[in-house]
Length: 136
Image 1 (spheres, rainbow, N blue to C red):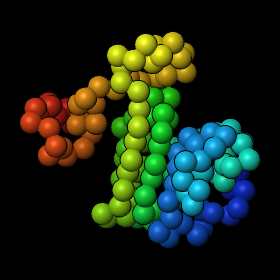
Image 2: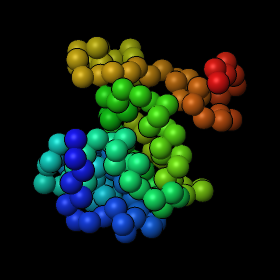
Image 3: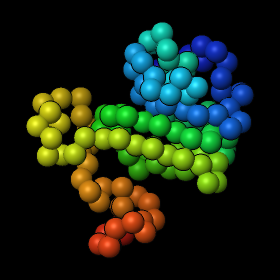
């Protein structure tokens, strides 16, 4: 899938905010919207992995993703790419449906499921008491 940078945003991302999988409406009007579908509010159209690979290292101040992570096929790869592009001390805010939500299993486009400790396997976690195994 070719990347379409509708506003030539990628070269000018220093300190920018991204909203991944924004769909037809962004929740953060100042954010650069990234989506595989070309809605009017989407600024960069393309595969999220390919788009993030084009983003300069430590150039993004904040990334928001609402009900997007459950649709990706390679969550560890996405997290690695986000760690590469987010500035030190930057913000990553992710909202996903809990696996117990009845709508979660109804959507055939959902590729991954999430529970209380899902992100604890991918990041250093000082929030929860329970420690999760490390697999690599």
